[in-house]
Image (cartoon, rainbow, N blue to C red):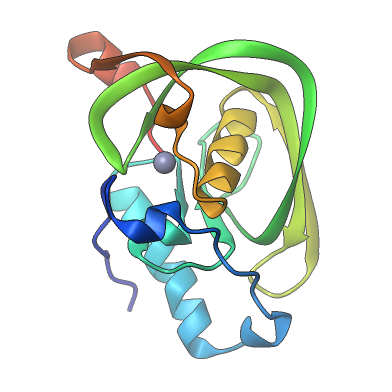
Length: 168
Ligand code: ZN
């Protein structure tokens, strides 16, 4: 059974580590599959559109996302390599590990990741909008970076803004 794990908040050291690559032989391990199930459960419970393993205190290069855009299925990506595409744009962003805050950050409008899925198969996911933003945000987490490191105009989130800001 998947269970919801605690999401670490800013200040916890795991959020600042460069996460370790996953050995592909580990992917079939039931404990690793459990990790992915728990990451999905934790992301949906939050709720958020993405979650990286360091956010639940596991310093491994894996993230999950579900941006509900009607085009992309929920996905787990292991050992992602990020490809930045398109122009830079300023976007509003929040993070489940920095609750109650939003800020404005420059991201690429389009991005792709290549890596392995939860079955160890090679995958490539490409898109724009929230998907692109989420993939950049999650790979940052795997490198020990939080959006607040370079976001501007950090502010408490409330009301309408809270409803329209996806967290990951
Ligand atoms: Zn985050």
